[in-house]
Length: 184
Image (cartoon, rainbow, N blue to C red; front, side, top):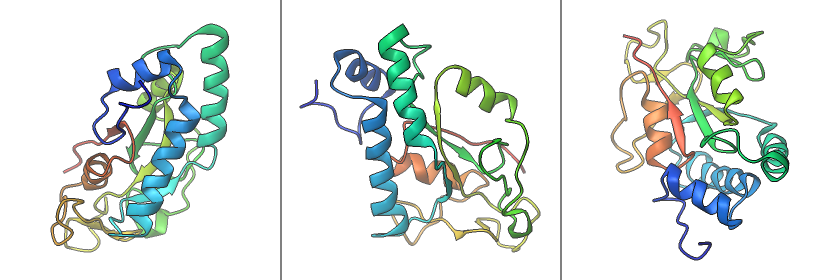
């Protein structure tokens, strides 16, 4: 399985098969995604989709690997990295809604969907860019926190829409899953 696992084409079923075969750990999967984010979001083409990385993602992955070994997986999402539009509240990362004055706004609770993802064993890897919730600037495809996110397939184009950071992150293979929402 290790020889055929391809991060860029793997679907959730492939990830779980690799976990089950012992060819992949959650820690390794998180490391692979962090390396892609570093190479393509912050360097290289500079897609500019990730606002905040979860500083505890690798620790969480290690704990979930140990739990999988001891008890088995909680669900098909056990140990799987997820990115969230920066509108979903997370108790361990700021939620800015793409609005610079809220850049360091720290919720005290997880949004219900985030809590359910964590209960299923998913790892919240990052919060990703979105168009400014409050309509600043007037151009609707960028935030005042991070600016414009680029389309990974054509950097001259925007992924557009309020969930453009989620779309760009998934298209660039920065996580296995991502959540966006309709906000406008």
